Amino acid sequence: MPQFETTRKVRHSAAQMFALVADVEKYPEFVPMCERLSVRLRRETPEGEILVADMTVGYGPVRETFTSKVQLDRQALAIVVEYLDGPFKFLDNRWTFQPTGEQSCDVGFWIHYEFKSKVLGALMGSMFDRAFRKFSEAFETRADKVYGVPA
Image (cartoon, rainbow, N blue to C red; front, side, top):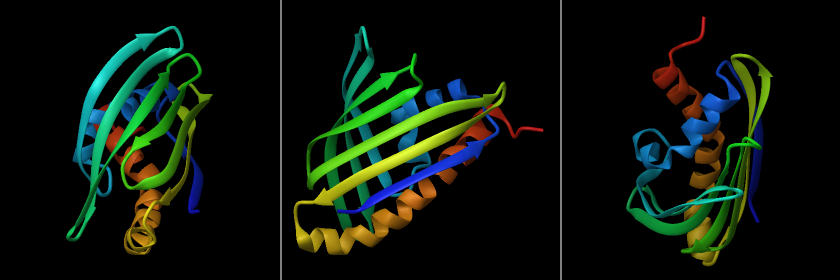
């Protein structure tokens, strides 16, 4: 059961980084292996905004689409992703944004998953692992592009 966790210090505010990660429709522009993302449902709740989204990931000739429920908690500066359907047995994903200054924060990224198919797991597993290692860097690069490179 692969798992990956990282915390990255970035020179953008926690609110800016939360907004960037919450803007899931933009993922195909910069997230490794993300080819398509569409939001099926968007709903406000007392706990925050909830999305149901389909994400298509690919590497070489292999493409897989999965559906997740995404809870955006702006108050807590946290994003929780709950797997609903697709090629995984399970997938849990969490993002946290801890302010460390007015224009800096620690971005925490954690993911734990397992493919239903051992063959697909063997085929995609190492690529997913490499992609997850580049996720935080991809979001920081995107933040520099959207908000400007900090001085």
